[in-house]
Length: 120
Length: 492
Image (cartoon, rainbow over the protein chains, first blue to last red):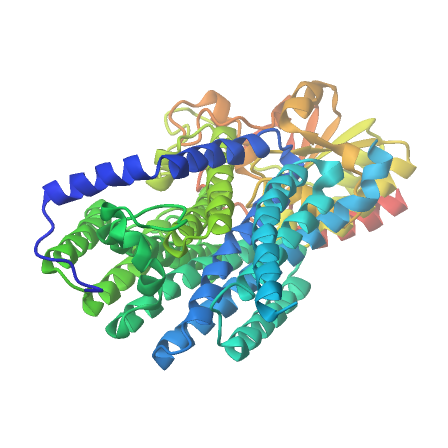
């Protein structure tokens, strides 16, 4: 039955599930580990001048949670109206994060544009 | 061709879009970390996000298009408006605000799901096939999760999202000035924080032991998370704000990744983990620049200052100088180094400082800028600001490059910087900032300091530099002082 699980959750059940989680999701764990290294590697040599724009850009990227808002709202057609209202609110906030984030980053980077040619 | 055929084509295209968006995220991040490709990188990442959103909107079983369209329009409008209106000096606050919105979105997703669970739950339906995992049938899911882990993920997401939300809001408030900027402390602070964490853990345990959904506990966890975000950022003061914003950014990334597991969406997981990992790296890089550990930052380890050199007799005479004397000193120097700090940003003096630079150069004075890694309230804050007023890129010298130059510099002009030029960081082991690398301006022939008042810096520590016999002070708002200095220079 949905939303219910039988009886108390003992340590045994937790360990069993944890074991199951690790064994069954080996591929997923590989993806996870590789993405962590990728995330570190990809910005590893960033010069100090770009720290603020990079932080702002990656902040926009962390708004990828917008996909979750879209999915929740999109699948909630026959759900309680409050679900839809909250999901809508979440969508608005996440969209602000994404659009505002990329636009602000672009504004910052535009300022470097002209000078780079003189630089080299 | 029948509709089923086109439908299949559409769904394959959308899958392809998802894959492409991950590639764009990675390329975007990579390009964004190099000056010549940074803009392209930002576009690429934005394009990836756009593709992923299109792919989501047109994926199987979606509805509520009216709601979706209106939400997207409102969000885009507000986001665009905010980004157009924000001043360059307020950039750190803006990043913090936007980051908070992302965290709030993740939190609201969980609350919405918890409300809906009375009728079965949208996400629970979405995940139903994954719960039969124990017996073997779970489709093409990225992760096969037992049901109690689905609930665990929801709760972790709820807590992380709400902490990130209020934490970012407080960080923004501190930078904007409507929350006390310094380190705010209260009795038994560590006890309350740890107690709150323990309470949240207890809530989760009770939840699981009860054997069924309890909205009250979800709501309680949400409120506890919101409160924790406030308590967690309040005691962190001053110079540590960039580190906190970067850390909160990393937490929001992590939240996105968790949400991605719940929604079974690879793009969300990849994007979230990328940001989480790189955000953490950026956080650590910033801590390194200040020679402090992340743990010390989070505990708010800049204890209340004033202990510097308490046992050493230092000359506490302040030597003020006039604008004309300062103008003459610089006009007849060979090399002048300008050290900008947060005071420059607050006073919006970036254009005035560029004008000063041009005036000096027209007289044949060589002008360079010394940029400390944590000058301002964010790494690179000064670079962005000076770039706005057209200061040439190659005049901005990083700490490692300018420090050996100081003995060959005639005049150093410190504008609104304090802790990053405090010699106590090198000389006084009792100082809270001891060990932090600084700009060694006291090795130059003369030092001019533009400062609003004799108040201690953001870290709350006295600065010996101001009492140095070769230091001259110019009191006032950075912009006002510089403008007057510029007109004085024209007269010389």
